[in-house]
Length: 250
Image (tube, rainbow, N blue to C red):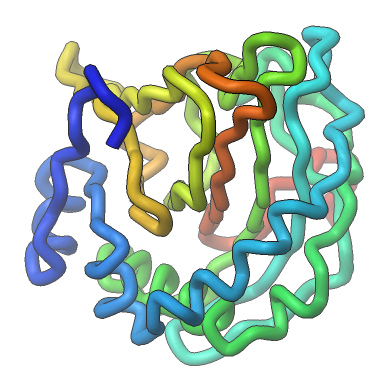
Protein backbone atom coordinates (compact mmCIF):
# COMPACT_ATOMS: atom_id res chain seq x y z
CA UNK A 1 0.00 0.00 0.00
CA UNK A 2 1.37 3.46 -0.89
CA UNK A 3 2.31 5.63 2.08
CA UNK A 4 -0.08 8.29 3.40
CA UNK A 5 -3.14 6.71 1.82
CA UNK A 6 -6.37 5.38 3.24
CA UNK A 7 -6.75 1.60 3.02
CA UNK A 8 -9.85 0.20 1.33
CA UNK A 9 -12.79 -0.91 3.52
CA UNK A 10 -12.56 -4.63 2.79
CA UNK A 11 -15.68 -6.79 2.83
CA UNK A 12 -15.57 -10.39 4.03
CA UNK A 13 -16.52 -12.83 1.25
CA UNK A 14 -19.61 -14.07 3.07
CA UNK A 15 -20.82 -10.48 3.50
CA UNK A 16 -20.58 -9.44 -0.15
CA UNK A 17 -24.27 -9.61 -1.05
CA UNK A 18 -25.34 -7.92 2.18
CA UNK A 19 -22.77 -5.13 1.80
CA UNK A 20 -23.80 -4.44 -1.79
CA UNK A 21 -27.43 -4.29 -0.69
CA UNK A 22 -26.67 -1.98 2.23
CA UNK A 23 -24.37 0.58 0.61
CA UNK A 24 -24.24 -0.05 -3.14
CA UNK A 25 -20.57 -1.02 -3.30
CA UNK A 26 -18.03 -3.38 -1.77
CA UNK A 27 -14.27 -3.88 -1.86
CA UNK A 28 -12.76 -7.36 -1.90
CA UNK A 29 -9.18 -8.47 -1.36
CA UNK A 30 -7.47 -10.54 -4.04
CA UNK A 31 -7.79 -13.63 -1.85
CA UNK A 32 -11.54 -13.06 -1.59
CA UNK A 33 -11.82 -12.62 -5.36
CA UNK A 34 -9.99 -15.91 -5.90
CA UNK A 35 -12.12 -17.75 -3.36
CA UNK A 36 -15.43 -16.47 -4.71
CA UNK A 37 -14.57 -16.79 -8.41
CA UNK A 38 -12.94 -20.19 -8.02
CA UNK A 39 -9.60 -19.18 -9.52
CA UNK A 40 -6.05 -19.20 -8.21
CA UNK A 41 -3.75 -16.22 -7.80
CA UNK A 42 -1.46 -17.80 -10.39
CA UNK A 43 -4.38 -18.01 -12.85
CA UNK A 44 -4.99 -14.28 -12.52
CA UNK A 45 -1.31 -13.37 -12.61
CA UNK A 46 -1.02 -15.22 -15.93
CA UNK A 47 -3.31 -12.57 -17.46
CA UNK A 48 -1.14 -9.65 -16.37
CA UNK A 49 1.47 -9.59 -19.19
CA UNK A 50 -1.25 -8.54 -21.63
CA UNK A 51 -1.33 -5.10 -19.97
CA UNK A 52 2.12 -4.52 -21.46
CA UNK A 53 0.62 -4.62 -24.97
CA UNK A 54 -2.14 -2.02 -24.88
CA UNK A 55 -2.32 0.49 -27.75
CA UNK A 56 -2.79 4.22 -27.10
CA UNK A 57 -6.29 5.61 -26.62
CA UNK A 58 -6.79 7.79 -29.69
CA UNK A 59 -9.98 9.42 -28.41
CA UNK A 60 -8.77 11.49 -25.44
CA UNK A 61 -10.25 14.96 -25.80
CA UNK A 62 -8.00 16.59 -23.21
CA UNK A 63 -4.99 16.22 -25.50
CA UNK A 64 -3.33 13.67 -23.22
CA UNK A 65 -1.24 10.66 -24.17
CA UNK A 66 -1.49 8.93 -20.81
CA UNK A 67 -4.08 6.20 -21.49
CA UNK A 68 -3.73 2.85 -23.23
CA UNK A 69 -6.58 0.36 -23.51
CA UNK A 70 -8.29 -2.62 -25.12
CA UNK A 71 -11.97 -3.56 -25.18
CA UNK A 72 -14.13 -6.67 -25.57
CA UNK A 73 -17.82 -7.54 -25.24
CA UNK A 74 -19.59 -10.64 -23.97
CA UNK A 75 -22.98 -12.04 -23.10
CA UNK A 76 -22.59 -13.68 -19.72
CA UNK A 77 -24.74 -15.77 -17.39
CA UNK A 78 -23.78 -17.47 -14.17
CA UNK A 79 -23.09 -20.62 -16.19
CA UNK A 80 -21.82 -19.50 -19.61
CA UNK A 81 -19.85 -16.81 -21.41
CA UNK A 82 -20.21 -15.94 -25.09
CA UNK A 83 -17.80 -13.59 -26.86
CA UNK A 84 -19.52 -11.02 -29.07
CA UNK A 85 -18.29 -9.64 -32.40
CA UNK A 86 -16.06 -6.64 -31.81
CA UNK A 87 -18.10 -3.49 -31.35
CA UNK A 88 -17.66 0.18 -30.62
CA UNK A 89 -17.83 1.46 -27.06
CA UNK A 90 -20.54 4.12 -26.77
CA UNK A 91 -21.86 6.21 -23.90
CA UNK A 92 -24.39 9.06 -23.95
CA UNK A 93 -23.22 12.55 -23.04
CA UNK A 94 -25.41 12.36 -19.95
CA UNK A 95 -23.04 9.73 -18.51
CA UNK A 96 -19.76 10.89 -20.04
CA UNK A 97 -19.70 14.59 -20.83
CA UNK A 98 -16.11 14.42 -22.11
CA UNK A 99 -16.14 11.34 -24.33
CA UNK A 100 -19.82 10.49 -24.71
CA UNK A 101 -21.88 10.76 -27.86
CA UNK A 102 -19.35 9.10 -30.16
CA UNK A 103 -18.50 5.59 -31.20
CA UNK A 104 -15.05 4.69 -29.94
CA UNK A 105 -13.46 1.74 -31.70
CA UNK A 106 -10.73 0.45 -29.41
CA UNK A 107 -8.46 -2.43 -30.31
CA UNK A 108 -9.90 -5.79 -29.15
CA UNK A 109 -8.60 -7.73 -26.21
CA UNK A 110 -6.22 -10.53 -27.18
CA UNK A 111 -7.74 -13.96 -27.75
CA UNK A 112 -5.11 -15.58 -25.56
CA UNK A 113 -6.58 -13.56 -22.67
CA UNK A 114 -10.31 -13.98 -23.22
CA UNK A 115 -9.95 -17.71 -23.94
CA UNK A 116 -8.33 -18.40 -20.58
CA UNK A 117 -10.43 -20.45 -18.17
CA UNK A 118 -9.72 -17.90 -15.43
CA UNK A 119 -11.18 -15.12 -17.58
CA UNK A 120 -14.42 -17.00 -18.08
CA UNK A 121 -14.60 -17.90 -14.39
CA UNK A 122 -14.12 -14.28 -13.36
CA UNK A 123 -16.90 -12.95 -15.58
CA UNK A 124 -19.31 -15.75 -14.74
CA UNK A 125 -18.76 -15.06 -11.05
CA UNK A 126 -19.59 -11.37 -11.58
CA UNK A 127 -22.75 -12.47 -13.39
CA UNK A 128 -23.69 -14.63 -10.40
CA UNK A 129 -23.28 -11.68 -8.05
CA UNK A 130 -25.36 -9.44 -10.32
CA UNK A 131 -28.06 -12.09 -10.70
CA UNK A 132 -28.19 -12.68 -6.95
CA UNK A 133 -29.13 -9.02 -6.58
CA UNK A 134 -31.37 -8.56 -9.62
CA UNK A 135 -32.51 -11.97 -10.80
CA UNK A 136 -31.11 -14.61 -13.13
CA UNK A 137 -30.55 -13.18 -16.60
CA UNK A 138 -28.03 -12.63 -19.36
CA UNK A 139 -25.67 -9.77 -18.61
CA UNK A 140 -24.42 -7.64 -21.50
CA UNK A 141 -20.84 -7.23 -20.43
CA UNK A 142 -18.02 -4.98 -21.60
CA UNK A 143 -14.42 -5.39 -20.45
CA UNK A 144 -11.77 -2.70 -20.63
CA UNK A 145 -8.06 -3.13 -19.99
CA UNK A 146 -6.51 0.20 -18.98
CA UNK A 147 -3.00 1.45 -18.41
CA UNK A 148 -2.73 5.02 -17.15
CA UNK A 149 0.85 6.27 -17.26
CA UNK A 150 2.75 9.43 -16.40
CA UNK A 151 4.04 10.21 -19.90
CA UNK A 152 2.52 13.69 -19.64
CA UNK A 153 3.66 14.15 -16.04
CA UNK A 154 0.14 13.38 -14.84
CA UNK A 155 -2.28 10.61 -15.77
CA UNK A 156 -6.04 10.77 -15.31
CA UNK A 157 -7.83 7.46 -14.66
CA UNK A 158 -11.21 9.21 -14.92
CA UNK A 159 -10.78 12.36 -17.02
CA UNK A 160 -14.58 12.71 -17.14
CA UNK A 161 -14.69 13.19 -13.34
CA UNK A 162 -17.14 11.57 -10.94
CA UNK A 163 -19.61 9.61 -13.02
CA UNK A 164 -21.90 6.68 -13.62
CA UNK A 165 -21.33 4.34 -16.56
CA UNK A 166 -24.99 3.85 -17.51
CA UNK A 167 -25.01 0.15 -16.64
CA UNK A 168 -26.16 -1.98 -13.70
CA UNK A 169 -22.82 -3.04 -12.24
CA UNK A 170 -19.23 -1.82 -12.50
CA UNK A 171 -16.26 -3.93 -11.38
CA UNK A 172 -12.86 -2.26 -11.08
CA UNK A 173 -9.94 -4.63 -10.53
CA UNK A 174 -6.57 -3.11 -9.70
CA UNK A 175 -4.00 -5.04 -11.72
CA UNK A 176 -0.97 -3.15 -10.47
CA UNK A 177 0.64 0.21 -9.82
CA UNK A 178 4.30 1.16 -10.16
CA UNK A 179 6.29 4.30 -9.45
CA UNK A 180 3.33 6.60 -8.81
CA UNK A 181 1.47 8.54 -6.18
CA UNK A 182 -2.22 9.43 -6.25
CA UNK A 183 -4.86 7.21 -7.81
CA UNK A 184 -7.25 7.52 -4.89
CA UNK A 185 -10.66 5.98 -5.48
CA UNK A 186 -13.77 7.90 -4.41
CA UNK A 187 -17.27 6.46 -4.24
CA UNK A 188 -20.29 8.66 -3.54
CA UNK A 189 -23.90 7.81 -2.78
CA UNK A 190 -26.13 9.32 -5.48
CA UNK A 191 -28.89 10.30 -3.05
CA UNK A 192 -26.97 11.57 -0.03
CA UNK A 193 -23.70 13.31 0.89
CA UNK A 194 -22.25 9.98 2.02
CA UNK A 195 -19.02 8.90 0.38
CA UNK A 196 -15.78 7.05 0.95
CA UNK A 197 -12.26 7.45 -0.36
CA UNK A 198 -9.45 4.92 -0.34
CA UNK A 199 -6.57 3.67 -2.44
CA UNK A 200 -6.51 0.22 -4.01
CA UNK A 201 -2.99 -1.13 -3.63
CA UNK A 202 -3.23 -4.92 -3.94
CA UNK A 203 -3.13 -6.58 -7.35
CA UNK A 204 -6.50 -8.15 -8.19
CA UNK A 205 -8.32 -6.43 -5.37
CA UNK A 206 -11.77 -5.36 -6.53
CA UNK A 207 -14.19 -2.47 -6.17
CA UNK A 208 -17.67 -3.67 -7.16
CA UNK A 209 -20.42 -1.05 -7.52
CA UNK A 210 -24.14 -0.86 -8.16
CA UNK A 211 -24.01 1.76 -10.91
CA UNK A 212 -27.63 2.74 -10.30
CA UNK A 213 -26.84 3.83 -6.73
CA UNK A 214 -23.32 5.29 -6.62
CA UNK A 215 -20.98 7.45 -8.66
CA UNK A 216 -17.22 7.03 -8.72
CA UNK A 217 -13.93 8.59 -9.74
CA UNK A 218 -10.20 8.07 -9.31
CA UNK A 219 -7.83 10.96 -8.71
CA UNK A 220 -4.91 11.65 -11.08
CA UNK A 221 -1.60 9.88 -10.72
CA UNK A 222 1.82 11.54 -10.67
CA UNK A 223 5.26 9.97 -11.08
CA UNK A 224 7.44 9.03 -8.15
CA UNK A 225 9.94 7.54 -10.58
CA UNK A 226 10.32 7.41 -14.34
CA UNK A 227 7.85 5.25 -16.23
CA UNK A 228 5.13 5.14 -13.58
CA UNK A 229 1.80 3.49 -14.38
CA UNK A 230 -1.49 2.17 -12.95
CA UNK A 231 -3.21 -0.85 -14.57
CA UNK A 232 -6.87 -1.74 -14.10
CA UNK A 233 -9.50 -4.04 -15.52
CA UNK A 234 -12.97 -2.51 -15.66
CA UNK A 235 -15.92 -4.81 -16.32
CA UNK A 236 -19.46 -3.47 -16.73
CA UNK A 237 -22.64 -5.55 -16.66
CA UNK A 238 -25.90 -4.23 -18.10
CA UNK A 239 -29.38 -5.72 -18.11
CA UNK A 240 -31.38 -6.07 -21.31
CA UNK A 241 -28.88 -4.93 -23.95
CA UNK A 242 -25.57 -3.26 -24.56
CA UNK A 243 -25.49 0.51 -24.25
CA UNK A 244 -25.82 1.58 -27.89
CA UNK A 245 -26.16 4.79 -29.82
CA UNK A 246 -29.93 5.19 -30.37
CA UNK A 247 -29.61 5.14 -34.17
CA UNK A 248 -27.63 1.89 -33.94
CA UNK A 249 -30.47 -0.02 -32.31
CA UNK A 250 -32.49 -2.41 -34.43
